[in-house]
Length: 206
Image (tube, rainbow, N blue to C red; front, top):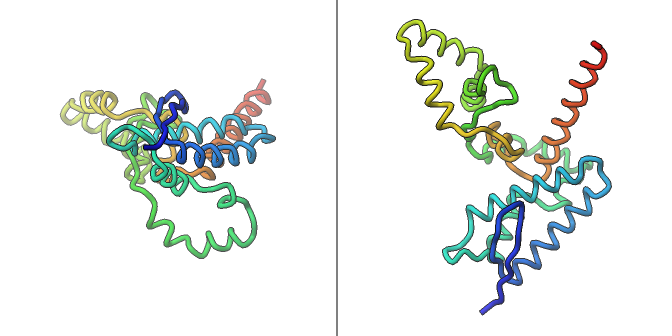
């Protein structure tokens, strides 16, 4: 019988055996070291931890104990630091394997997209899910309102049942992108850059 340890990850509480804890800690320490000197490093690391907690919550065994198997699955899914170090060779491999990697992507998950919303993000979320411009979805709801009057009712129902994309992981799933360490890093940096550009534009207008 292996000794279990109680740990807290991003607001979740898990029981994990000693071997699994040792491997998880080493992996997280390596990632923390990679981002410790970056401006957005803490935010990136916190989102990585949040995704790890989500995966553990999905994969925990029948007895609720995280084993080495679950940790190895998470690391395989998220990637190791050396897997996303930028260099020419890896860039070439990514380019060569693109069609293969594209096929491996998980299916998109449906979320409300409040980053590109007009009201509650329902149409933007449906646009992401079906790979179409949300303007067309909005036109369908407008047409449904004038033709049968049931457009608003359907919209309200979808607003209630479709969850909002809040975390970086959820936003990646909404786009059909793999939730890996490198994609989390890229998404956060892109979001911060977007906010900075938006702030600079507002400042120039003043």
